[in-house]
Structures are given as structure tokens and as C-alpha cells.
Amino acid sequence: MVGVWFALFGALGALPACSLTSSTDPAQSASGSADPNADPPPADSLIPVEASYAATHVLVSHAGAAKVPSGIQRTPEEARKQAIAVWRRLEAGESMEDLARRFSDGPSAIRGGTIGVYATGTMMPEFEQAVAAVGEGMHTRPFQTAFGWHVARRDAVLEAGARHILITWSGAARSKSGRSKPQALQKIQEIKARLDAGEDFSEVARGVSEDATAPAGGDLGTVAPGQLIPAFEDALFALTPGQRSHVVETPYGFHIIERTR
Image 1 (cartoon, rainbow, N blue to C red):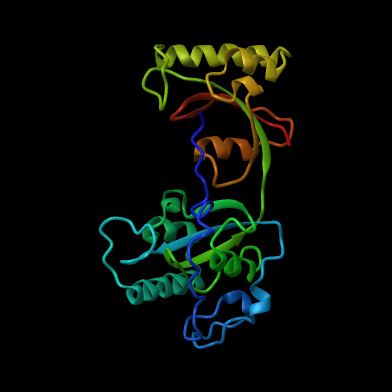
Image 2 (image 1 turned 180 degrees about the vertical axis):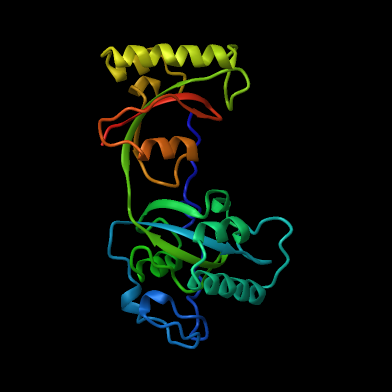
């Protein structure tokens, strides 16, 4: 089955709330002020008004934070200072993705900090409020949650419908297949030829796909950036609705992907 990378805080909204940044923290650039002593935006401006948002972030954790990674000994104040340093580098034009890979302590770091689309009310309130307070493409000032200090960028909400066919080989992730990788490649190419000849995607998926979605015709439902492994996601979002991919390789096997909407 395709490995889904869920948003970091998707099931953590019930954790105790932490305060937003104080007036001594850097102001976020979307407000038009880079004064580190500027007051935070009015509380009314921090209320999320959209049904869903998308974000990329850097998390700087510290000792005592929720789900702190093993080995992190920095204090909350040290984490705050490091988040401010990240914020200043963003202000200077550095890439959020590069900074996340280098400095983020969150599991999304490997993906450049992206957590994709999330529904309002499913994330930590402080995170939702900070992201909602800036425009698309803008980054927040440093803010605090139970997990540590963050700097986040609000991304465009992008979603796609997807279905796929998966053929695995011995040694692929979660595979129980006994075939070799060349045998798997030959099989997926034969399947692609059937689809190219006009066979129904859902029917073929039900008959041959080795993913748990096979009974549903390979349907993955609605997918957003940050939820799937990169190779699969990159192929999907390169398609337009109704288009089908060439053979795509991931650690789980070979896929043929169709964007349904």
C-alpha cells in the first residue's frame, strides 16, 4: 500500500494549548513589519476562516516539549532563539524547504517541512491561528505550541483525486511477492499496454493491483501535497485530470497512476 505521510499534528488537536508568541518575538513579514519588537496581530485576525489550509514549517523542539525527539537537550529559550534565526534566514530569502531539511526536528523535515492540506480544527490551535494570519506564500513569525517553536509558511490548498495500480517485487516495502524486480517491471508494462488499448482502469486494478485499494478499483480518494511519498506525489500532481502516468517506481513497487480530478 502507498505509504501515506500524515500531517504532523493531524490527531493532536486535543493537547493542551500553548501561548502564541509574545510581543518581543519577530513580527511576521506578511504584516509589513520586520520590527522584532512589534506587537502581534489582533486576536480577531488569528481566527481561521477557511475550511482547510496547507503549510510547510520548521519545528525547533526542546526538552520537555511534546513528543520531543530523543537526544534533544536545548531549553525552550534556546529553541526560541533558533526559531528566530531560522525566521531571519527566511526574511533574507533562503528556502523554507532547505531550512526545514537542515534544522527542523519534525518528521516532515525529510520532505522539506511540508505537511500538506489539513482541515481547520484538526491541528494545534496555535499552529492554525499563525498560518491563517498570513497570506499564501508568506511565512509566519516564530510561534510556540506544545511541540516547540515553529516558523510556518502558508501554502496554496492543492488537492487531486487519484487511483493507481501497484505491482510489487521481492524486497519492495511491505511486499509479499516472490517475483524479481525485472519480472515486476515486465508485468506493469503489460498492464499499461492493456490500459493503453482501452481496458477500464478500475476493472484492471481490481484484477491485478497488489495494493489494499484494489477492491475499490485502485481509488485513493482525495490526495494533497505532503500526504504521499514524493515519487508518487510528484507524478500525480504533474498530471491533469483524466491523465494517466507512465510507470512510476516507489519503494513499494511499480505504479500506474491516474488523476481523476
